[in-house]
Length: 305
Ligand SMILES: Cc1cc2nc3c(=O)[nH]c(=O)nc-3n(C[C@H](O)[C@H](O)[C@H](O)COP(=O)(O)OP(=O)(O)OC[C@H]3O[C@@H](n4cnc5c(N)ncnc54)[C@H](O)[C@@H]3O)c2cc1C
Image 1 (cartoon, rainbow, N blue to C red):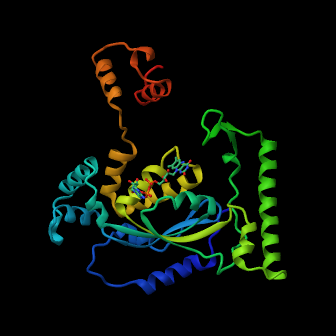
Image 2: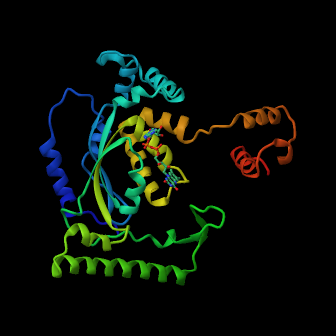
Image 3: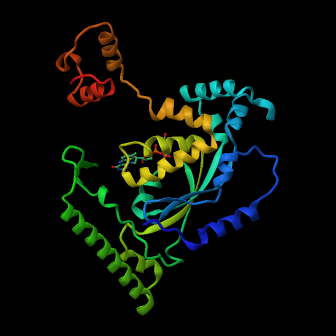
């Protein structure tokens, strides 16, 4: 299903990489250099690719120590410092690194993405250019019913096979139909592109350049590589997390440990935990927690509800 535009073929990317190749005295990440410019496919037509970046783990350490190039010490000491900065939310050294992506994504994913205001964006103009006949159609295993408990989410139950096939047919047919009418408005009726596009659904693909500093990127990843985020934007965030691991391996590990997989507890839960650790048996009614809080607390620590 995954397709990349011809200008992003392996040959074109190799040519681009050769054109850009230059000696530098800047600090670079060899692992990230390997994939620079190369698109990583996401969803059926989307991709994310790194166009440029600034800094490495060493730049964070260097800024934190306000030192010259030789500011980095042994890897273990650098790791310790980055862990400390992450743990203590001492964020400005992370702002010293920047990254620029070229991203192709469905418009409904872009709407969620662009809520992150702390990045610089330039998006493909559908007033200026014609949109391709490329729409996001979910994989069949992503088709589930609306959750009855979570108003923003899916249930875990897959849909009946025949219903799923019918849904895919409806989605594909309506996208095809919308694009045919879009082309008709443009080619036969000479309507402006800026108005003709209004007939297209939010599953149509757009593209953008997105530049962000590392501090804000980590915030984005914390929210969007999380199980609460919608599956489609999460697919992109997970790929970007993989890119982060190549680019800044020490920061990646610190982020996973101190942010992504860490938990924060309200004070009443801390008090409760102290009592439980001291051997006290506490029921939900005695805990002072709401039903939802109690369920989350129990799930976090693997307790029987
Ligand atoms: C699971 C999930 C569900 C969501 N559901 C909805 C929804 O139903 N409806 C909806 O509208 N949105 C929803 N959102 C979007 C969410 O409310 C945020 O707009 C989005 O995640 C961007 O977060 P942010 O503002 O922290 O990020 P950024 O815009 O990148 O900002 C980063 C930080 O900078 C600071 N900041 C930036 N701009 C300002 C400002 N103008 N004033 C004060 N501080 C600022 C804040 O500290 C902010 O946390 C959802 C997000 C997630 C992850």
